[in-house]
Every structure is written in C-alpha cells, then in structure tokens.
Length: 240
Image (cartoon, rainbow, N blue to C red; front, top):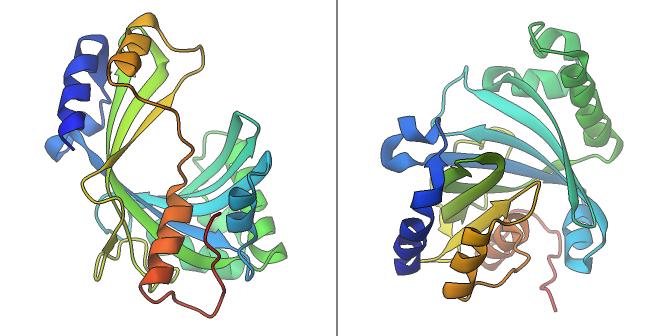
C-alpha cells in the first residue's frame, strides 16, 4: 500500500476528487455488489475462457444499509475493449418485491428520466428469469476516485480492501459479517478513458513501472469464497 501514497502524490497536480467522494470520510465510498450467475457459473467461465464477448449481471449499492438506499440493476457487456453498461435504479426495500413480481411500472420510479431506465429493468428481468440466475458472490471495496481536471472522460480510481463473504443471498448486499479479505495490503488501480492517456499519466505509469493486467473482482471473490467453504455444491475451477 506504500505505492498508493506515492501514486496519489504523483497524480494530484493533474486531477480533482470525485465530488461525491469528497463528502465522505477518507475521500472514499464503499461499493457493494451481488453478482448473479447461472447454476453452472456461465459468466464466470466466460471470463476464465477470455471470451471477447461476455457479460456480468449484478445488483449494486453503496455505503451503509438503509431500506431507502438506492440500488442499481446492472448488465455489463464487454466486446473486445469496448464496455457497455445498462443500468436502472430502485430502492433497496423494493428489490425483492421487484424480482418476485417483475412489476417494472410499480417499482422503478415514475420519475426515471427516460424510458430507457425502465427498458433496462426489463432487460435485467429477462436475463434473471430466462437464465435462472441466482446470487453467487458478494463483492465489496472502498473506492477513492479522481477525474482529470481538464477532461472528465479520464477517471482514475483506487479500489481498496477487496472483500466478500460466503453466505450470499438477495438480502446480503450490505452484510459485512465474516468478511473474507482478498489481495491483502494491495489495491486495484483502474484507469478509464474515452480519449487515451495524456502525457503526464504516461510518465507516471513509466516511472512506477506499472503494467496493464486483467483483474476480475468477481473471479477473485468466487475463488476466495471457494477456498473458505463455498456456499453451494457448484464446482469452481481454478484458472490455468
């Protein structure tokens, strides 16, 4: 983690903190996800196989529990290097009723800014029911996010304290009991950009001898939970 301090100091002249993170302790917020998969872990296998076209389906929330906390239904598709995310929002207290009833009109707020939000909820339900998806693993971590001062299309995040637990249900999004920690004393650096790396960032990467590496928090946490008594009878193969 010592490298995090050095890296932060090197980028700070060029970036600004995400406004939301600036309101939180330590300039970071907690990201929480329940990943859904098929009974034979099809999405997990797609990632291990390195398929150019693959998807992840998850329920995402942030920070602390509240019945009225916003949660997001997400479908994340990757085709080569291109990533597309379909997302819709509802209240945590409505999550289970929504999944049980499939009533988009009732549970997706009417104030949604456009029809696409409700369409995304319908897409989520299609995969959820058509592929008989079920909660597979939780993933949580603290995120410290920055934007390039002159182009918010460039985002740099430090993801810390990656953890999970091996008793996942649709009610466990905010659960922290018996947390299992992955990548101890390490963090994940993510750089997202729409227009390439500016020269200052290339110099930072070069000076710290950083290298691109494909890291899946989902895969890491599935394996972690498997090692500690995976919840279920599914076989989880190790990469390689």
